[in-house]
Structure formats: structure tokens, C-alpha cells
Image 1: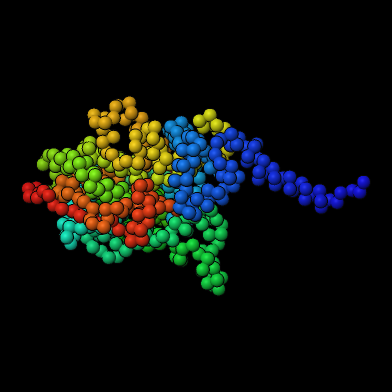
Image 2 (image 1 turned 135 degrees about the horizontal axis):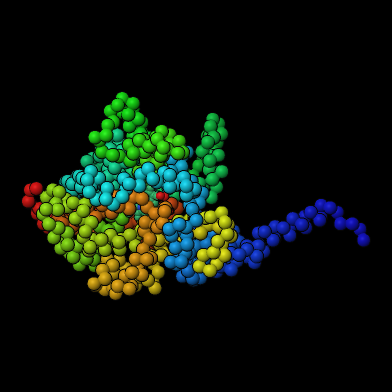
Length: 540
Ligand code: HEM
């Protein structure tokens, strides 16, 4: 028999190796092959990437959970959990799982920050520097509460001046959250005044609206090397690759990031001139800067690290609170929800006069004590979470979750979207019903406790949202002020239209209005009629 040529042996070996690693291993031999899910997803990461491209990832994973159960394999090395066991193991206290490289697209000025650190040690060192400033005791009383109340007062002035009492709450609520977060982070070195009409500050919101941002996120996640290469070309090559750029150059959040850097530079210059003293409000910028060169500064925090940290909090604090407030006002304004609005108004009208800061603005503390308002906000965060998507985590060792073996470096995670729509936990999950959260009303205490365990809008564990109390202060105080004074309703032509928000690659709306939301999103506007029903005359 003639000897088989060496090249043929190599080709056969290569083919066997490829078939093994691309087909047999993922489908039969990997420990993940025991996890239910469609084979096309188990074979290639590009199957889920295609859903990302279409902007349907989160809904598709939700459908897979409905079909395959609480644990679904969504990629050769990716698993989604829709269970309390998954939440505890991945995000619970002391969990070894950490954020994946996915989050590196949120690095600012090339520097990592709280949101993007993978290492738990680096994360907790940084978090120690700012966590006190975000704690409930600091936010609910003192200068931060006064700051929020003053921003609410300005928003109420804006509403009073709106022609015909109609406000586009998509825009105006973004102005409110922008002004609140910039004042909190930068104090006088970077406070914006979008609510009061600054066109330059209002223009910063334009950054968020650019639809090309979703395309750029897709490239940054799925083709990071290529994306970096495309954006770093210069000269003739730069003009040649220009048509291929997912988003025009300079790309994403440029205005906001530039603004954030300028705020830092103003602060730095005032520091050098000795114009920043301890009598001024403790901004986050000032706290981080005081840690420079002290024992707390174990990583050598430099000026760009500080600027990056603040810019990230700025981005985290704009859409989240304004989108939630927008859905809240929209949901309460729908004709079928007027009874909820009436009950809310009764509650916020009963805030005692001693807890009012001005005739129109209740204190942050008193607003936070309103139980019905709390339920309205919670239900809004359940059905319309501003960050509804999968939160990917990984760990470099083998582990087990919900009885399934998970190889090292597998991406695992859960999403508020699916957790909050579990029909076994939330009755009629697609219906916005704030009273489901009131144990004395429709729910028994056992069911309420279970719903609370599944409520996950702010994530959980060491990486949960640090801005939770600030966000709650902004949302409760503004909503209390609005519903003490106004009755809100949808303007004609907007009755069949739900608002929409963007998050990463996707657009989210009310699932029952999906077609109509697309039409609306082209204009990004949500017009609400504010009718004064109660004249607030008492002067404080
Ligand atoms: C309704 C309002 C808000 C919601 C629902 C929300 C939700 C979340 C969620 C789900 C995460 C974790 C995301 C992930 O791991 O993928 C997160 C993290 C974070 N949020 Fe918020 N957020 C809100 C408002 C704010 C505000 C006002 C700030 C102000 C600075 C903020 C700052 C942050 C930061 C810095 C992180 C990273 C925390 C860490 O890794 O230690 N958030 N937020």
C-alpha cells in the first residue's frame, strides 16, 4: 500500500480537530452541553451577536427562558439564569463572580472606573473613596437633600412656564437629572443649568439620543480590536475607513465626556489657586481629589482616573433616573391609571406642612416616607427598568450554579427584564399595577416577600448600584412635588404611543405597544399635559 502523503494526514487531523472543537465539544463534551438551550446558540457566539445586531437580545433570551426554563445556554461559553439560586450565586454577598471585559467599553479617557473594574480588590479600593457620599444618611439629609430639593423647585418653575401646560417629559426630565447629577458630582465646577434654559447644557443630551451609539456598542463588544483599529487611523487611511465607522468620529458621548473633563480641569485650576476650601459642599470630585497622595490612594489615582470616575457616574446618573421618571409620569397619565394617580395625589397632599421646603417642594425625607409613591416607583422600575439587560459576570475557576457545572471563564448572568416578568412571581406581569406592592391591598405577605426577592432593578451584592439613594431621592421628591400640584394626562395623538428608551444595543418600550413606540422614537418626545388642580398658596 502506498504511503499516505504527510499533507493529507495533516488535513485529516486538522478537520478532526476542527469538528471536535467547533461541533463535538460544545454540543457533547463541554460540561455546558447539559444545560438546555437551542443548539445554534451553543455552537457559535455569533448567533446571540445577531440578536444584538437586531436589538432583540434581551427579549430573545426571555423567550428562551419561557421555552427552556430558568437556566439556558445562550452561547458556547455563556449561560443565562432566571432564578433566585442564580442571583445568589452570581451576585450575592461574597460571590467570586466579577464583571467581564464587556464593561471595558465604559472606560473613560482610557481609564477604568467603578463600573468597569474586573478585579474585586481594585473595585473595593475605589468604592471606599466614594461610598459614604452615596449612603442613605448623607443623601436624605443635609446639603445633598437641599441640592435635590432646589433642582425640584427649578423643575416646577419650568413646568409652570410650559406653553399650554404641555411638557415634553423626555427632554425636560433629562434636563432635571443632568442638573442634579452634575451639581452632586462637580458642585460649582461643573453644575449645569439645563432646566433653567442653558442651550449649551441642553445640547449635551443630544449625545444620548444618537442612534449610531447602539451600532458602535455592538462593534465595541463583538469586534473590539477592529473597532479600536478603525478609530485610531490617521491621515489617508483615516479618510479611507471613514465610511466603515459605526458612528461618526469623534464617537460616543463625546460632548458629555468633554464637559466632564473640563469640569475636572476647572476644579484642578481652582485647587492650584487655593480656591477650594473645606467649607464648600463635598462634591464627589473633591472627595476623590482629597484621596490623591494619601494612604487611600493605593493605586496612584491620577487626574485622569478622577475625571474618568466622575464622568462614569455622570453617565450612569442621567438616563437612569430620567427614563424611570418619564415612564412613571406616562403610566400615571394613561386614562386607565387615573385611579392610581388620584391615590398618589391624596398621599403626597397629606405630607405635613412642616415637611415642605417651599410651597411646592416637599423634603426629600418626607417624600421618601410616602408608601404609595414608593410602590409607584417600584412598579415602574419593575416593568420599565432603565437598565433591563443581562449583566455579565465570570470567574477564573470552575464552579456550579443551580446544580449545573460551570467551567472557568464562562460568562454567566441574569437580567431584570426576565426576572421582573416571571408570571409565577408577578401576576399579570405585563400590567403596570403599583398596588401589587402593597401588602394590605391585593397581595398576601408571602407573595410580597417573594416579589421583593425577585426585584432587581439596582442589581445586588458588591457591584450593585451605588447611586440608588441619590436616584430614589431625585425620583420621590420630584414625583411628590408634581402630583401635589398637577393632574397629568396624555395629549391627543399620544394616547396610543408608549415611550421608548435605549439601553446598550436595544430599544425598550411597553411590550404591548412595540410597533407604535418605534414611530415615537424617531422624534424622542413624550408630551404630557400638566393641569394645575390645586393652587399651592401657602408661603413658607
Ligand atoms: C433609577 C435609577 C438607577 C438604576 C435603576 C440603576 C441601576 C444600576 C444597575 C442595574 C447597576 C449594575 C449594572 C451592571 O452590573 O451591569 C448600576 C451600577 C452603577 N450605578 Fe446605577 N442606577 C440608577 C441610578 C444611578 C445614579 C443616579 C448613579 C449616580 C452616580 C448611578 C451610579 C452607578 C454606578 C457608579 C454603578 C457601578 C457600581 C459598582 O460597580 O460598584 N446609578 N446601576
